[in-house]
Length: 409
Length: 134
Image 1 (spheres, rainbow over the protein chains, first blue to last red):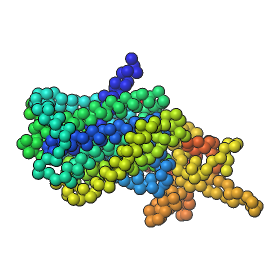
Image 2 (image 1 turned 135 degrees about the vertical axis):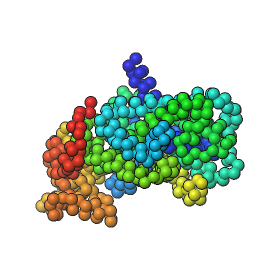
Image 3 (image 1 turned 120 degrees about the vertical axis):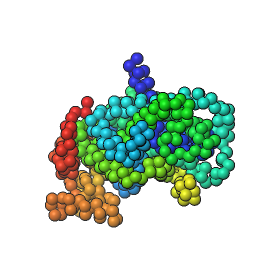
Image 4 (image 1 turned 45 degrees about the vertical axis):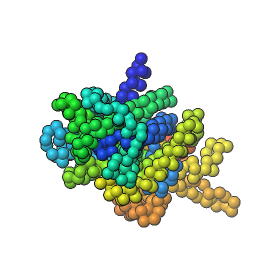
């Protein structure tokens, strides 16, 4: 019974924790411009993150080591440093975006400009990282994020043409007035948002933080196989709502208020309130995850003691990196830089850097020295290899598409 | 070079870039480089005498302009004028497995100085730095 409770809790947490500012912006924005015709990119991204997060969780559980520790070991000091530079930069960019996202949610609530909220939000995030234990921290914000399920009610209330939505999703075609490059640019944005590297850094380090053992591998599988696809479903709801309400009215998405608009239309103030709480919980949770991931990646590369499982003074350099990352993110955030734009760049650049994260995971997941009899099966290896080819293609296409489409404008 | 009787350890594969773990289970840096000594005698093989760990050793692995930059920062921040990389004598190495285990606590290692600096100068100044994780 206790085990079942743990598994359910893990699934729900993974579901709520899956969504972050990247998914919110990318799904709403593409829904408003392309309808459901890019739903396939979300599905593909979810399959990818499920595949590699399961591997990373399994590797971390059996080796009790973080992903970047093993990246360093497999790639050597030099190549791994380049990898660290790229991964850290993207995770840091995502941290700025998440802090901005929380601030935008609070602006919706208070009418106080988001720039003023950023330092306060960042301080709160740091305080939680400093004081709260890992498990309650992860669970509270994951569960609170499930408030976004209000979107399901909104969808039902709006009683859309379901077969039309399904038709758009199952027989994708480029919307008239949009070019192919723009279409694929946004496909990459959705893909990058679903597969953001920090999710793997955080998830695998979390397995070590929570001291998972071989018997917890069931939990790993349940979280990833059930929780992540359910999280992906939340993303698709955002897209569907934007398709029904924003697309016919040609409303673009450049603020969270437009993301919340369909739910507000369907359910009034209650809908808006629930969406704001959902935005807050998911982006604040992701701000914690990205800030911690900044510390995880750097500490694991250099072999420093990391993690919340020890006292802060016992992982001094780890906490110093987390603290500095948050401070610099605030300094960038308060320049008035547009959080939605930062989000778009962070997910697209994530897509360009995906092979750097996922290649070493695939290699170590086949290493018997660490994995014993829990190495990848043939199906995981086949799918993993196919995905790796796809990731390389995506990575190569990203920057040219970004230039050609002038970042999707 | 053999650690356990009959087990061969390839320095490049089994030592370099491995995690160092101290006697209390704390992570204590990476094996950034190795110090070899060639004993006297014409058919003597080089012996690993120390693990080099920390930015001073890592700089050499990175190489190029970035490597020189890391080395110069390390030298400037270090109290001694020409410190060289921090060494961990190979005598304290207890086990070489997926990680390298040493038989002393990490504060006894030269390579732990930066950690202690971060702790003393920044982290300990913040209220709650010593609170228990559980």
